[in-house]
Length: 195
Image 1 (cartoon, rainbow, N blue to C red):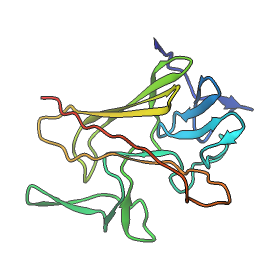
Image 2: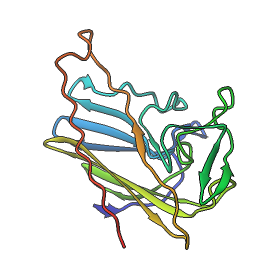
Image 3: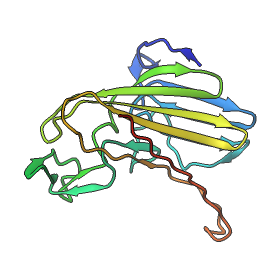
Image 4: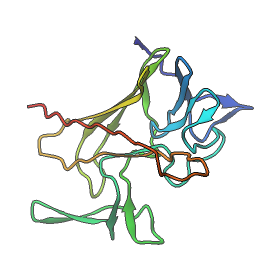
């Protein structure tokens, strides 16, 4: 991969797209579009088959479609959690249900670090904020290959104290009218810890 240039998000008639810059990658008949906003996977297709139920670039991502969920997936009831004997309070990002939902990076502008024909890497520096006073550098690499899409999410704690961290993703798979019977989803995962 080669280093990417860091420019403004694409403009359409003088406006920035809600999902920001679009990074297209291809390998054979596989194609994907990754967004600057949230470093999400907006589309994934194999030939004419749309694998993801994505969204158009001129719309705000709805319901977490293709988004990364960092530094926590799921919901924190009342936006609270306990850490080292202290109660932490996050902003409620799903106020109608009283939750802090799916982390802090979903609508952030990520930097394009590297880009090639079949892969790209984006990064984001998560600064401390009320309720999550930790500094993390997070990155994601999307790579298309003969065996499909590979996604690698990494996080590095840049602070002095241990930081709570978890990662998730929200791909919305598009199924045909036969339902899920007969489908096989393989999601090998690996965790590595740096000292």
